[in-house]
Length: 160
Length: 173
Image (cartoon, rainbow over all chains, first blue to last red; front, side, top):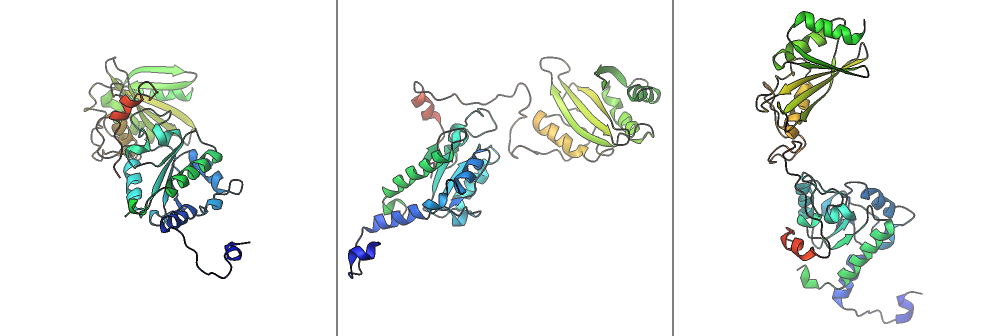
């Protein structure tokens, strides 16, 4: 059934390196554990058996920034949390991506006041915004697939 | 004699000028004290055999702007022996010259006073450890005061999207 039947005994596959690297990056993208509020419940649900994020190679939520590629900011970020978030982002090795999950992380949401950062994009560059309060697991998976779409179009030298 | 009346009698006997007002609502008693008498009264409430308010459960403050005196500090205490609650209230005119610290009576007062200072800016006399507890260390001002700006951001709609977007401080990579 696999590629080897179609290729016979050739033993060689030619492919564009860029596409191959991007394919690898999209299919083993480990997120950092960054549940800050109620959105984290939906993130856990995405992870669990019903929605099964391991279909996208995301079965491992890493508690260490050094082993993760994607930061899903799930919840509102307070001004006190902001430097912590930035430090964890800086500790992640490149290539790295950020997804702002939910209204609070995207734009402050209902917490329009002095204590909450009005959108996590003030602290870290965000690749994908997922709307909703909180977004359902389907929405988060859609955000992840949108991110995959974005990564497939990236050039190797973007991260060089 | 009810516990509420007993407290008042004991305080009046020991400190005749301490009580400024007594507010009672559904058997819940608030005693408004003069600022100077606070520490003596608290010592009495904790040490008296019949009262034994050995648990200071909370300290909180009110900002009554534009009234004068502007601030008031409330002390909530509980007697684990008598299972009775009591609230003391002290008016504060100048937040820099707040009530005396109660650390020597209830050690927990240290952190509760720190919280009040952090959010309301009332400086407790004698509490040397006042620092930021909930807010970041470099925070300016005291956000629970009524004259503190809420600091909200205008909501982006399609008609003002670009205007707000231009002012928004986006992060660099």
